[in-house]
Amino acid sequence: GEEVAQTPKHLVRGEGQKAKLYCAPIKGHSYVFWYQQVLKNEFKFLISFQNENVFDETGMPKERFSAKCLPNSPCSLEIQATKLEDSAVYFCASSQFRSYTDTQYFGPGTRLTVL
Amino acid sequence: AQTVTQSQPEMSVQEAETVTLSCTYDTSESDYYLFWYKQPPSRQMILVIRQEAYKQQNATENRFSVNFQKAAKSFSLKISDSQLGDAAMYFCAYRRGGSGGGADGLTFGKGTHLIIQP
Image (cartoon, rainbow over all chains, first blue to last red):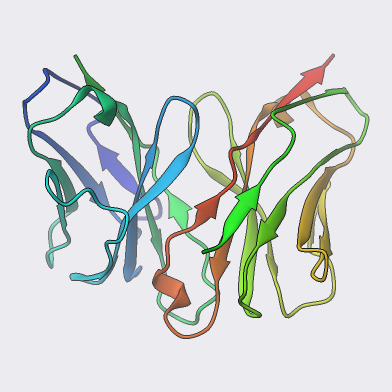
């Protein structure tokens, strides 16, 4: 598609429950990124993929967060045993592998509320 | 590690006037890219303008232009003829260039809330 698609728009989980978010990048884009925007508006980079390969996961809290981008499937971000501080808007972005200049285009985000 | 600083949490401007949003950054890289993103209340992130560090000419996109001062590590956004639809959060962002930079995450500033007074 021509836009980054994210599902669901909203997700509510009780503390300790699992949350799974999905992202379909723009067709033809090889890079996928996940960001977390907390309520104070600050963005935190979580992880990037080049096709199905993890490129940079330095921002991921690995003990509870995991992510995948498998061929012919939406990318996913999964949070095991959610905590209150995981409440945030999670954005997926994609960019095209062509040169090093390509812009990241963002999806509409998934708002996760942990109660 | 690179940092991006937006020192103005909030700015207000009269409709049709001009406003400048500030952004400074710190990096040891010589090859990098800078971006301004707009985030309206819908939370959708919209690219406003981008600047390649190797280009001396300041980027412009219609009413939006930047003042890129590489030596000072400053990247301000000027919005001319402000419109009500420009009201939003504006984020300055940095990404390194070179091999591998394409898959780097963006480093964002904390944002500036722009209010347009009718």
